[in-house]
Amino acid sequence: MSAAFISPARLAELCKAAPNIDLIDVRTPAEFNELHVQFARNVPLDQLDPAALIQTQRDPTSPLYFICRTGSRARQACEKLKKAGFSNAINIEGGTVACDQVGLAMVRGKKTIALERQVRIAAGSLVLLGVVLAWFVHPAFTALSAFVGAGLIFSGVTDTCGMGLLLARMPWNRNASESIGSGSCKNPAASG
Image (cartoon, rainbow, N blue to C red; front, side, top):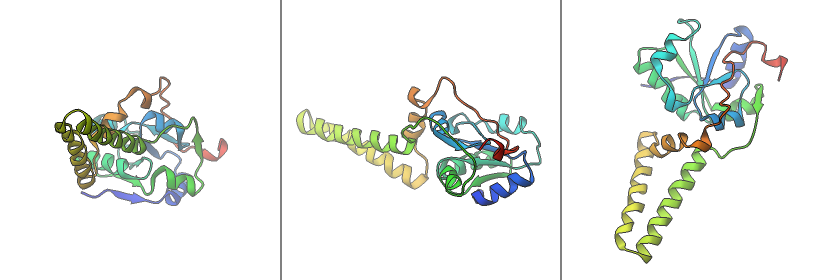
């Protein structure tokens, strides 16, 4: 099941023609608050309920546009919606990074550590911990490193990341103010 894609440049064109585009950013609230397309609204992937999203959609015949940092989580969101029977889910090619590069109006906030970097830090730390414990405590601790390695292989093969989903739920990836954004590109140039 492959998701439909459009380029950030095409998104900008569509926004000028139809200002009620529903753009949903599926990153964590902390990532969203760091940098997001001005008219995006935040619905984290781990909280995405396709049925509820479809019911609250402004116009049931309009497409829902999904975005994340580079496109992987947005593709997963599109696939979730397609499995729920909604066939008009569209992934923004290249994600927020590409939208920023083509000059779409962006909101910039406090810098955070991207979820992908958090996964690399956590996985590397667990592997190192497993090796150190195996060396100094007991050889059975190599199982920790093996478990993390197997998880990384599974993540690469399936393009899903259990550690990423777990880290997305951590308090530092959630903000008390959890900005949700407008979800509409009505007059984005006016404040950008």
